[in-house]
Image 1 (cartoon, rainbow, N blue to C red):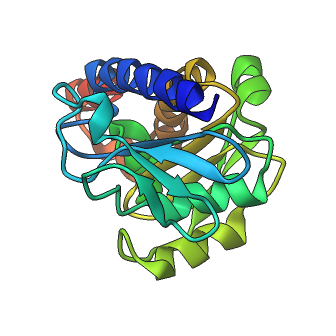
Image 2 (cartoon, helix red, strand yellow):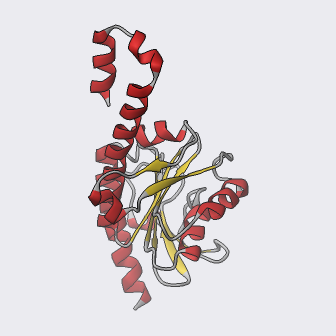
Image 3 (cartoon, rainbow, N blue to C red):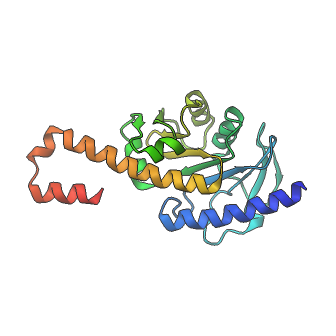
Length: 214
């Protein structure tokens, strides 16, 4: 039975990775995805593997408690510790997605929590996105920083100077959530730009181009 579940999860993950790559949220080999198999195991994307050429056997099955690999031939993503932490501290979460999507990543540079404005966003994500203090990617320091910020009131976290981590009940919801978060990030950036006194000194054409880009 577990073999059937793993096979199904792998198939769904590959399809989701292609969708996310098409959206520009998983670019090249950047970003990663994890799906819970059961209370003990998770499937994660491998490190340094193109999402358009990824195969079922490339995906890695790890133990959540210690990241021991029980199935797979490639090196699992270096952010496996983040996904395991999410699954451990939020047992209802089934999917953990880490993206480098452009606007949400831009917001991560500000080092601020981001409020969610839309009702759909609040329903899927929560009322805000929490910022996680900076630590080098793929390190235990980043995992510890992330664990400290996990709460039940939000499913999304901005890794300072890095990107986004989003939890969901399904892969479909995860994709919907990161799309919503990109819109929320655009609104957040526009609002901050409009309130910046230096923007009023910019030529109107330049300001219009800046706002249109968001």
